[in-house]
Figure 1: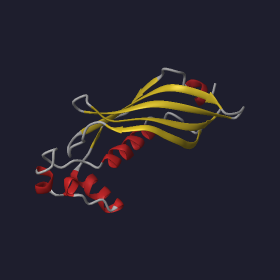
Figure 2: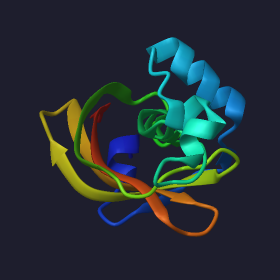
Figure 3: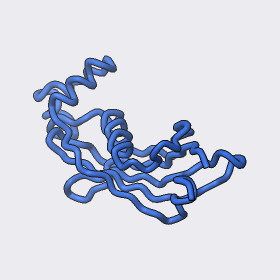
Length: 143
């Protein structure tokens, strides 16, 4: 049996935790050029609806992808990341928050005799149990 066949409908996975630091936010801002005050300036963030600095949504999304790769879901079967749909930033992630990724297989579809698509419903949850990011992601795997 291959990795593709092991990823049956309904199978669930949970990542380890990752705490988002002020350094993570500063490095992401430097890398992307998004230096918005709500991310980097305490005074500006205090005046925002959040009342304090928040992580970039795309930083949280990127960290969720990294956490998922640590789950080793695909072994050596991964060919390509095939898509992302229904992306939703549900709640802010504050500096010092810890996130965990939950993935559930919601679709498996053979492409041909050597490849298949796996689709996950993915939820990124903070230490309080709040969903902070949600999306559906697809991967092309060897069969």
